[in-house]
Image 1 (tube, rainbow, N blue to C red):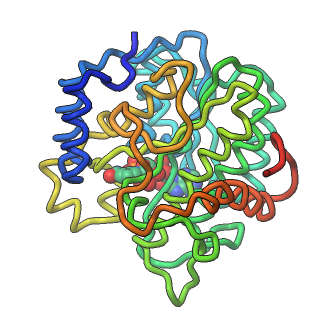
Image 2: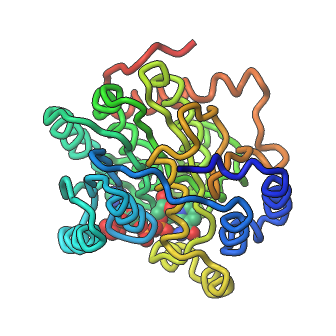
Length: 336
Ligand SMILES: NC(=O)c1ccc[n+]([C@@H]2O[C@H](COP(=O)([O-])OP(=O)(O)OC[C@H]3O[C@@H](n4cnc5c(N)ncnc54)[C@H](OP(=O)(O)O)[C@@H]3O)[C@@H](O)[C@H]2O)c1
């Protein structure tokens, strides 16, 4: 059985207090306290289910792939490097899981990503969960194979292309889910399509990353709006502060200072696995961002919340923008 994130009043109070402190919430303290107070159960079994995890060669994505495999799912692993992907596949199997496939693709290469999506979709079969986890904070400006700044390409365009290709499989599978791994860093930025892609002159890694992470939350909600009637739930998650190779590379000083209080990759992957496995039940409310098995507001920082009318436009505008950059093809009803 699964808990709905601990709805007992004491769990709600503990969660709110942690959330107010930020560090208490995002660090290991938040994970350990919420797990204890809400008495989290093992996520639902996934025997006979199929999932796909991007960025499965390292950190949170690898831990999620292993965790989902352990629950009984057959796991498709997406990576860029053959050896690292093979090592991750061995870990999934070592945990008793099944590897459905190992696929090598750079999500910044939109043609290769679309090809992979098309190949998987042509193979048919079920897809119970698509986990968009791949991502990186790049300190310096760089462009992906598609020519777009790489944070945007990896975090938005590649995942958009993959989701669009795999949407028919998700729609054909009862109660399927899209789980997007965003970041608490997104709280610092408001969504602004005009400022989403930074140029070389103004590029700042933390800002570029936070803007993309904010946009991922907007896009996750938009996929939910478009595919919800077809039984697909789309959620965004932030994993907290997690000790991974990605953190070492992206924020080395932060990692050194906070190291004793960082979550393990498994702890960072917990809510991802739980949601992909059907945690929170059949009627997951739209929007917000999930953290430690509970849905939280996507806005904590003044000036980041859109006006009500703008809020309704953000998802359709971002979706149309991604569509224009990744090629044509429609999924679900048109905006508005
Ligand atoms: N660690 C944290 O504290 C933290 C906090 C908030 C959010 N997150 C988010 O959690 C997710 C996982 O991060 P992590 O900390 O686990 O980092 P990680 O250990 O560096 O893992 C990142 C994964 O993404 C893959 N990847 C990166 N760029 C890619 C691309 N262009 N195409 C395909 N795959 C790509 C990497 O592949 P390679 O093995 O080939 O490099 C790797 O498998 C990211 O979205 C990150 O933004 C992490």
